[in-house]
Image 1: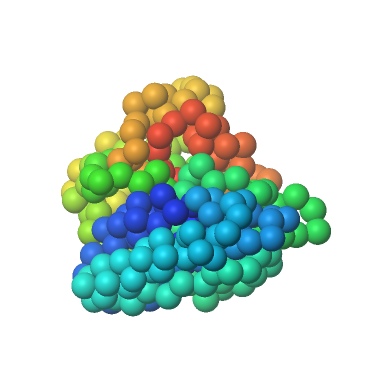
Image 2 (image 1 turned 120 degrees about the vertical axis):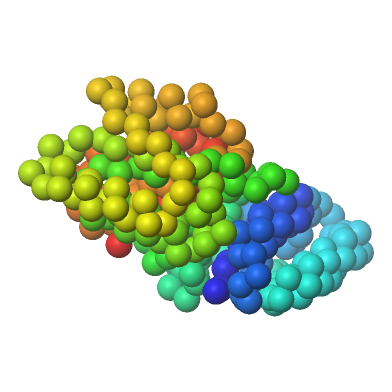
Length: 268
């Protein structure tokens, strides 16, 4: 497995790397730390990799210690760590990384417009739309995943996101699952949900289905109110036929703004 971690602050290095290694378990992997430099700053490093003077003398030792720590802890887990740093990163460069990665991991609170070079303001939406692999917007925790929320709206892409999560999180099959199913009024939804139930029963041990006659926003806000940083919500809001989906980009922003959950987003 090849995982790319997008890092914008020193404090994120240990948090996100520990989260990554927890996800991978004993799977030998290549972990690439892509250190984002704040735009329009003359130096590559600081507490935000950006804006202090005399960075070379004051902060390089700290940075080098972090890299050595990352290499050691990753090696002890049977994997390898590589750092990319010291230059501004463009949105197309990150998108290119997604082509050759199994998953991208970033902190859920990162404002990518502050870091990614592009001809216009770079937004989280831009990255999610163009990504060629799943993206995990994580809220790091010292605890393992305690709950998974799968969102299903009858689309093939929502099932694709569920399957990708299953492939990339093989250690989470015993974690309690809440399946939030929204009626899409597709003619084949009932038949497809039976197939989904069969698939879920084969892959997960504890499943609770939530099918409620509420708006999507109300249902997601309810999830937000009942969840913490150890809850992972799986969604597909971009990609093919995104215009026809019940779950869409504004719901990603809703959960980022009102919940403590981590978001796993994938599309075909």
